[in-house]
Amino acid sequence: MLLLLSYGIILIVISALENRMVYLPRPWPDDTDFDAPANLHDVFITTEDGARLHSWYLEHPAPRGYVLFFHGNAGNLYGRRYRFLHLSERHQVSIFAMDYRGFGKSTGMPNETNTLSDARRARTEFARLAKISVQQITILGRSLGGGVAVDLAATEGCRGLILESTFTSLPDVAKRFYWWLPVRWLMRNRYESIDKIGRYSGPLIQCHAEGDSLVPIGLGRQLFEQAQAPKSFHAWPEIDHNDPHPDAYDALLESFFEQLAPLDSVVR
Image 1 (tube, rainbow, N blue to C red):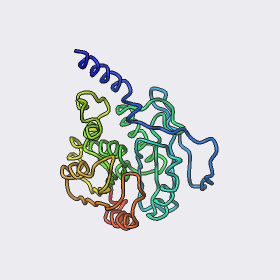
Image 2: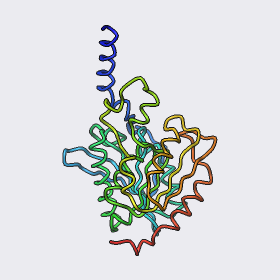
Image 3: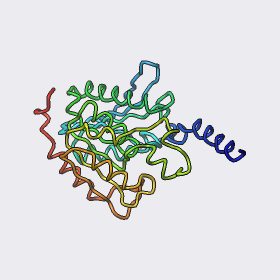
Image 4: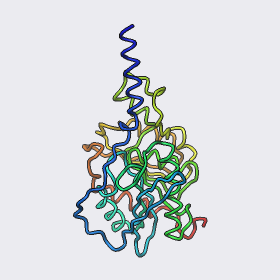
């Protein structure tokens, strides 16, 4: 009886702390050593319930593509500043990236419901600023951001979808670390990409580290199996979840962008 009571208390505590375990935001640093370029714009989106979402719009002067970027469950935009600059300059794309609620300069508390709805606001704002159709946007999601990206692509479509080190569902990831808990019953944040990705019919490129210790590559492969063609999967040997991408990734993205439908052929 005591054992069952203790287990029940553990379940209650973990359930109460779920959001703090799923989302690991970092506040915006007080002192920055980043000399932001003139084409990097701060954008703030106000939600219907009063949250203020900080975003970056990195505007390329002659873009051949538009990338909506959703990052993982930790840090903030500032920690990814050089990734955005490299992606924009190397591949000649404009980028829009949003910090989830509670991350960086964004206010509020994150959860799956508001993160997915905020993603739609971010896409609408990106299209407005760039003066393009939402269907001309390519969506890139990394780790937890992959769950956000899949939901948006599956329900509303996009020019192309890029997934990095993402999963079938969040409970599948949690089960790896908390095998002794009923995480499928317990978790409120789910990001059930495995049930959604089959509804996306555009081009997909998916990448995963073979030695990923946070999101096992098997979950990435299972997600890929449920996706429609055209699609391609690329496994990176000898790196972990948070390691930098290998040099080959740039060539892979370059080929992907070249194969996407021309912007002027996408429905406006």
